[in-house]
Length: 99
View 1 (cartoon, one colour):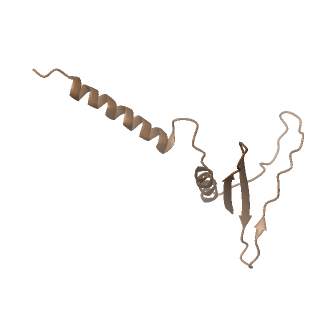
View 2 (cartoon, rainbow, N blue to C red; view 1 turned 60 degrees about the vertical axis):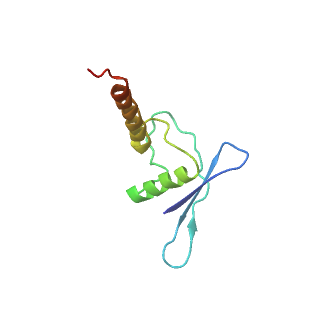
View 3 (cartoon, rainbow, N blue to C red; view 1 turned 90 degrees about the vertical axis):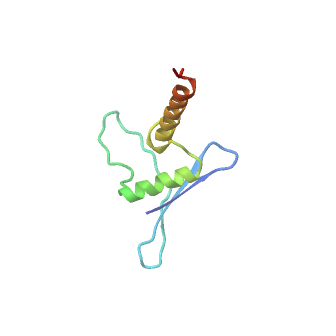
């Protein structure tokens, strides 16, 4: 499964396209999802199941479209923590009183 995410101009939306190549030269394209009203608590199947590689591909495409994680986890969060630690160390080293 292949994903292509594209930020739509003049809107606050991301267009997501999904395709598969079954190997016979054809291309299989996902059509728009259909939302259906359900009773609260009713069990349903997920609208899609992804392999780990497919999920990573989706995340990569969303990243290329400009989206970033909203919480401080992952590599962005780790980098922020590292930068804060460096700032603290600089404060300790350069502002400490030497005997």
